[in-house]
Image 1 (cartoon, rainbow, N blue to C red):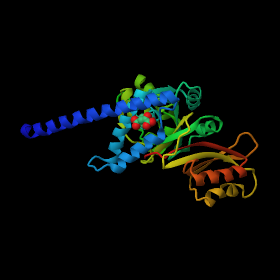
Image 2: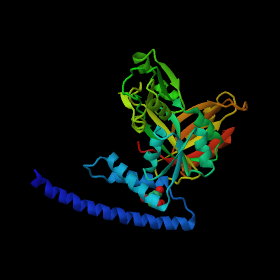
Image 3: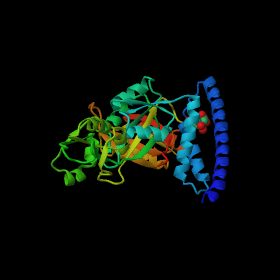
Image 4: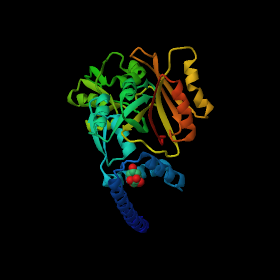
Amino acid sequence: MTDKLKPLREQIDSIDAQILDLLNRRAKVAQEVGHVKAETMAPVFRPEREAQVLRGVAERNPGPMGDHEVQTIFREIMSACRSLEKRVTVAYLGPAGTFSEQAVYQQFGSAVEGLPCASIDEVFRATEAGTADFGVVPVENSSEGAINRTLDLMLQTSLLISGEVSIAVHHSLMSKTGNMDGVTVICAHSQALAQCQVWLNLNYPNIERRAVASNAEAARMASKDASIAAIASEMAGEQYQLGVVKAHIQDDPHNRTRFAIVGHLQTNPSGQDQTSLVLAVPNKAGAVYQLLAPLAKHGVSMTRFESRPARIGTWEYYFYVDIEGHVHDAAVARALAELQDNAAFFKVLGSYPLSLT
Ligand SMILES: O=C(O)C(=O)C[C@]1(C(=O)O)C=C[C@@H](O)C=C1
C-alpha cells in the first residue's frame, strides 16, 4: 500500500511545486496590472473580466475536475490576485453568518474585507459614501418574491448594479442543545419563518414564532438562551456553536435568493450580460404594452418584470424590468432609446454579467 502511494505522492508534490510557481507568476502579473491601474485611476475589480475568465476555464476544462470546482478554484485565485492590487471592501446585510455574507464570498472570493451592516439601507449608505467599494443586497427569493426594500432603494440610489449572485438557501432548525427540550420560542428573520411555515405548522404548531432582524441574530440569541431555537444557515449555527435539531426545513427544496452587487462602477460588456431598468408609464389603457413594444421590435428578450406601487401619487406603478444584453449592445441601445421616449420615468440600474449559477 505505502509502496504504491509513495510515487503517486511524489508526483503530487512535483505538480504542487509547479502550481505554486504558476500561481506566483500569475500574482506578479496581477501586481503589474495593479500598477497600471493605479497610474490611470482605473477600477481594480472588473466583474466582466472575472466573468470571462470563469466562463473560459469552464469551457476549456478537460476534466476529470468538474466545471463548478474549477471555477471555485479560479474565483479564489483571482480574489487573491485582486487583493494584491487592492483589498476590496464589501458591505452586506450582517451580522456575519447571513446568506448575504455567503453571497459576498461567492462573488468576490475570500480575499475581501466584509463590512456587516444592520440594514439594507445601511448597505446602500456605506457604499454611496465610499466606506465600502461595493454592497451586496438581496433582490428576490424564489419562494417569497421580491425584497421590496431593496427595490425601493434602487429607485433612489446613484449606485449601479455591477453583478448578481444566486445562492441556494437552506434553513436549519438549531438550538444550544441540538434538541427542542425546553424551547418555547423559534426565532428567525420574517422571510425565513415564511419560507419554513408549512414545516413549522406540521412539526411545531404550538411553539411561538418570533421575527428578529436576521437569522444570524436568531442564532446568536439561541446561543445565549436554551429556551430559544433559531432558524438559520448551518454556517451561522457553526459560528454560534449550535446543535442541529433538523436540517433543510425550508418548504421549497430549491429555495434560492438572488443578490445584486451595487457600486459606483459602470461594468463593461462581458459577452453574456443582463440590464436592469426601472420604468413608469402614464396611467392609461395599453400604456404598458406600448412601453415594452420597442423590446420586441429590436429582438431584446425580457427576463423579469416586477411591479411596485409608486408611493408618490404621480404614477401608479414602477416596473422593474430585466432584459438580456448590455446597454452598449446596438440592439439594446436602440430599444432603450425608443422605450425612454414612451416612459414617464426611466432609469437604468446597470448592465452586468449574467451570474454563473
Ligand atoms: O485583468 C484585470 O484587470 C486584473 O486586475 C486581473 C484580475 C485577475 O486576477 O485575473 C484581478 C482583478 C480583476 O477584477 C480582474 C482580473
